[in-house]
Length: 428
Image 1 (tube, rainbow, N blue to C red):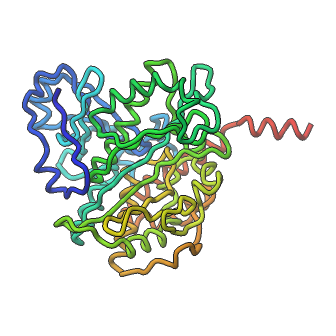
Image 2 (image 1 turned 90 degrees about the vertical axis):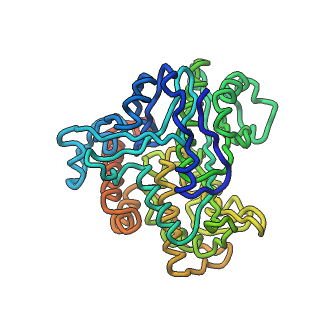
Image 3 (image 1 turned 135 degrees about the vertical axis):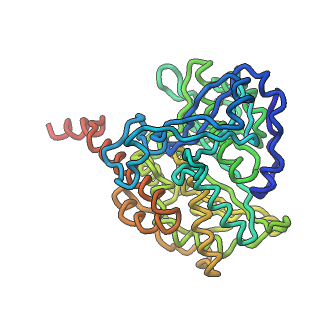
């Protein structure tokens, strides 16, 4: 089966392009899925004939409607859409997908490939999550550095009755996970080509974590979404669901931790102090990236393993930034983001913030010292993101994220929840 290997460790954008496989044999594949990461940590997808892809799409691209980068989770255009983004939704015209052959991945019955997206004139789509990340990677390379990234997503499995498939607690357990074995066996088979590093039961009911090996940043983020897609596929085969809510229940958090190390372009490990300091300084203002949904802010109240307080610590999982690895190969574990966050945007935001620390040669605060906290509500998050988001990620990306978070707030305020009904009963 055609597929691109996933080299581990750092890789520059140029090295990544040079190592992309040739499309030999693609025309023999019955079905090809063209995938585009959207702002909600999922793929927009088009299924095509493999021969058509080989003969036409590789040279000319293929259309995808422009609204996929401004739609809400229901695939509607939100009333909160910023005026600067109306060109994405006023005519619903086509953008052009360009397959990245480095992402070729066998999936059940097809071959998947993740795409970049451009306007018809060939200019990049500035708010496409892949474009946002590529721009930050290029900026980091201008400073002589290349990252290696690993992403940890926690997933919760529930049966047809909606109940979790494990009981609390099963952290690191073998016993008590028997009901998970069939779906995990199917998932392992589907994920074989992505380079899995580890898998284990987690601390909350039904929760599990499957971690891919470190790789270049684009591959890490693309593969994180491919992993979610394949795990959901495995779950559906067994009549269960795989959920990536940031908080499945009050007091239960599911995270999207990012491990990141830096190397010089010639492969030598690089110190992380100034990068760490830049992220700490900008982390609060970037809260909408780590916490894009109403549910995200429930997770940020769940306790020490999803900490709002900003501080760093050596091998300290109660710190929002954990310094891990040895002196010869240090890495930073950023623990801000929930499982619902968009990985390309999360890594892009980390790099953008870290670059400010590198450029200003910042020193981090003393280890263990509190230096602020993430926003505790979507309203707080919006208040500080407008200027910082435009400065760090660009004005169009800031407008996109503000529009989507405002839509999330509107939707939350328009819903009636069991919590509201319970409080009403208490007043009776």
